Image (tube, rainbow, N blue to C red):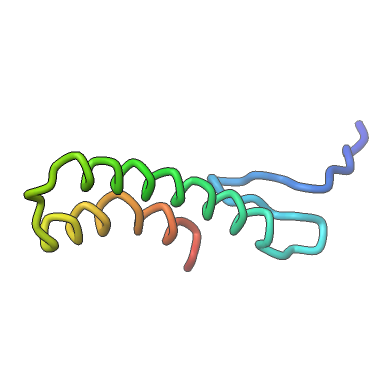
Length: 72
């Protein structure tokens, strides 16, 4: 049995590269968080009477968990 060499490996949702940096993981999470933020902004613009506190709660519940994933 031989081991296969790979440049990146995903484990529990965290992408590691061959140098053990988190650059690929950060890029993936930034893209996902950007899409979540775009969806939130679309809802904010559509619902003009949404207050800042509601927006903040949605941001904390939808965008921040993506950015925090694997940060510890």
